[in-house]
Length: 340
Image (cartoon, rainbow, N blue to C red; front, side):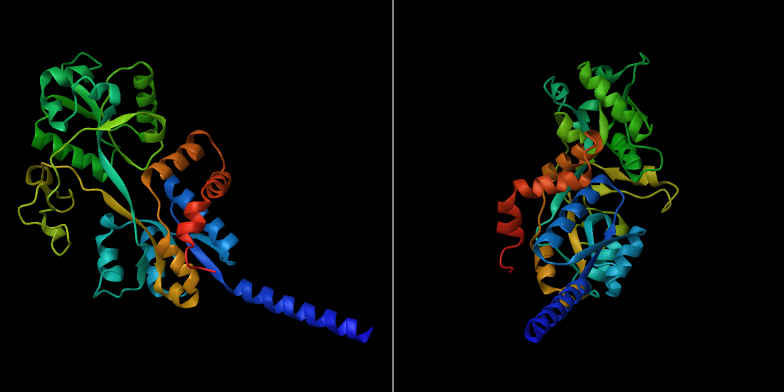
């Protein structure tokens, strides 16, 4: 009887020790506030908890604070799941690139986010394929819904940096003389897009990927000359800087004559979007770090996740679990390759 009791006691101690060890392996994801990021965060959480035997927690904070916490390496934030690195030059220079503090690590293969002016595919089939086409009066007339002689296009919402980029493009390509810009809220323009496509009417608008509209509709990004470099002084020191590059953009806060001084005569290059994690996590949980380096997504997949959560109103937990179950070759064959 005493042997059995001792065995039971030993088993209980072993279980307690094992449970305690597992509880100590906590990975904290810094939450971002856009749908694509939330979906990626949930997929990472489920894979890590299921396959890597860790507990995943989340915390919300301003973006800048999240990267500062990754740099600090104290475990308050271990992972930022959707880092748009080309929009964060200060953080890259401080924490990521060789010669910096090198306290933030990125996954090996980013997915690409894009921006531009889009039209439905049936408008492209009418011969409207280039952004410069909007400077032609006969083309602009296709988008004139109020009969004032100017076409309409959504430039972006009030206060968005992209809205100013559209204004600079209009000045450079000449469609500021043939098109007028609307700056209604995003929710309003989404309704306008849905109505126009349902009626097969022309519509032009600024948008980006990943977003659910690309999973819902067949859209065409109006073509621009290929990007060859950022030329503004603020881009000096970056790998995409070129003194005579095609993309010169100044913020209104940088100079009063920002519109006159800016020139955009090419497309904006794709933005590289990485999963970022703290180097301190690599020391604390090397297998988790290896997994995070091997993770990779694509914009079409993220588009579909956003559509499911935002339009179909499927809980993000269900979207993530269904995708993981349907893609073992990616999750287990690629992301977890080489791990126990």
